[in-house]
Amino acid sequence: MVAVADGGAVSVKCPACDRAVAVTAARGEPLGSLPAAGKLQATGCQSPGTPDTREGPAPVRTCTFCLEPVHPSARKCPHCQEYLDPALADEHRPAPPTSQLALASFVLALVSPFLLFLPAPVAVLLGAASLLTGSGGRTRGKGMAIAGLLLGLVWTAVLVFLVLITLFVLASFPVAAAPKTPPGPPFF
Image (cartoon, rainbow, N blue to C red):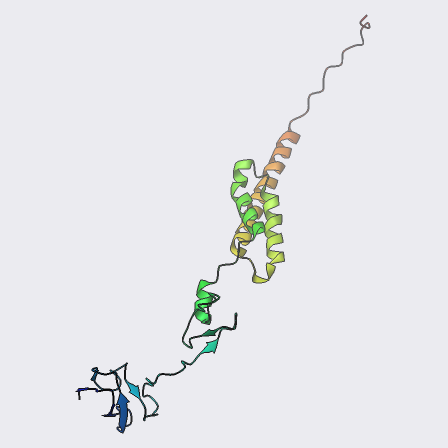
């Protein structure tokens, strides 16, 4: 049913409860069905599921961060810019920083073969320190710490093997004694 309002109330059938509801509209506006007419003002129906288009104070809730009133369906506070929706807050929360000990352990383990395997024991110590401190979940880098620790152990084993081979090779050759010269006259 479409009618032209003359500023008075018109009776329209409520789609939710099938009751006659008094509806008002501004002068000259066409009246349509209640759910489609967002500018109409229902004054008689209080059925659940019926859109309440009455003018009045909008329902509000308070922001848990700044205690300012916000719209009930707001996902972000317009005043303090904090996320009110927990899922949205988790999505936009910055990632924790990477552990510097884990990063140093990983980098030293990677460059150790190029530096005669000398940084390998330091990589092992830094990787172990990073895993032991843990930071209570405030930092990332557990995988880098494990990789640095394992690579450091491998390169330390290679370093020990090379040192042992070098010592064995040096020990297998007899050291030639310097020829003894008879004492001569002192130089004056």
